[in-house]
Length: 248
Image (cartoon, rainbow, N blue to C red; front, side, top):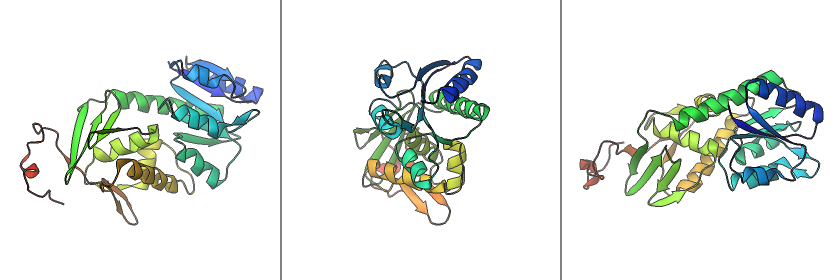
């Protein structure tokens, strides 16, 4: 079960979708407008938010920005705005899915279920909780238990989608991963032109990670994580850290 926030001004859509989600034993908190939403978000009880874009008292995009300032919870946009620019903007704001009206309530409920399962797997992974990579004189640490990213001793903050993509690439270091695979494995969506949203997420990641070339582009195919794993080494005591250049 999860606590799901549903912000939708159409009474019929909101009630139908809430009913479907409640059949899956989720708790649904309903709003027909933005007013009051952040009060609930700040209470820390919401696991996932579904946001209409066009609301009577403001924009769901602006609401998403406010949510992203305080939470990395999965965000799903539900909207009649189906242009590519709107979809890209949604993902740039940290959305995990973008669903265009009209839609199937059952399909949306299944997408929500998949997102929640993925989040649970991410937090409950059997892989090492704290993983470390090196790239020349830089270090990157990922702590999956605390959802913490530290690059060169500086803690950085990622959106939910950025975290999934970085973790997925890092766990497959030096393996080229296609955009289609990232879409399927990390974000669970695909539509015409959606590969460009991966490029946007990667660009945002690179900007946050700084000057190191942590994520390389393989033109015409996809991306590769360039760091070298230090997992299993003792306090960065691997031979290649004493002056030996890492193999490429």
